[in-house]
Length: 302
Image: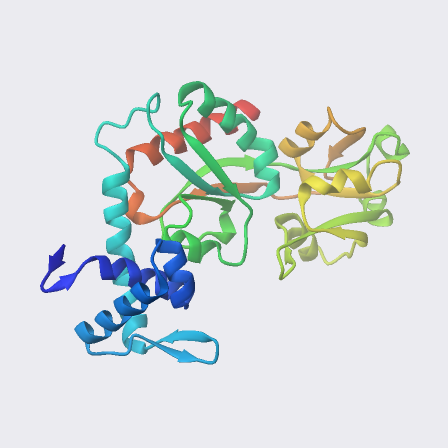
């Protein structure tokens, strides 16, 4: 189809080129041959009168014109995707929609297991694809590579809509045989013990709990640092170590691990967990349904 003498299929190729910065990978993504993708790039250059992407070393880099054009094309393609993916009469019982959700392993265990149960009961043909957070969360949301981002409030992209899901209490957790849990845990007990810490992603980003504890100005003795919340219990069993974890997660872990937990021994803020989505999908009937199921799942777990 052409619009103002432009083959609109070229815009899909342009978006793939901007995301992959490679003719070969764009061709693979779109199911094209490499010569066909190269020809599409030549036609884009001819239509816009700009090089669009230029080869620098082994990667292609967009021109300033392409950088300025891309967000507009991206929004247009997302609107088209929404229009064709979500019929006016969304029916969860018959829908075959695939939802891509980005969430930490804590949210997976504590909430998304219940969400999956609810979805399976009401919408047996719907698929859930759950991805771990990366440094590209916001970029993936902008590009439409994920439908829903579940994240603490302080990590939201302020220019995209979001909604409150639930508040989460942080607790001190350790091996059930640790004598500290036989009495009221004190702040001195907490800071004297060795700890298992969590740092996320390749950049080892601090968790909500670690950020809050740092503000207290009293350092913890981190004996082991792991990359996921779900791996913490393995390093607590049979030791005197402690960790700070989400109460929902700890409750989900207790049937599988010999754990005990106690309230934080000093005032500690609650985590506000949010769901974020793209502005273009604010009124997506299928996503509205999923967000409601997510809220109900979080309430059920609480």
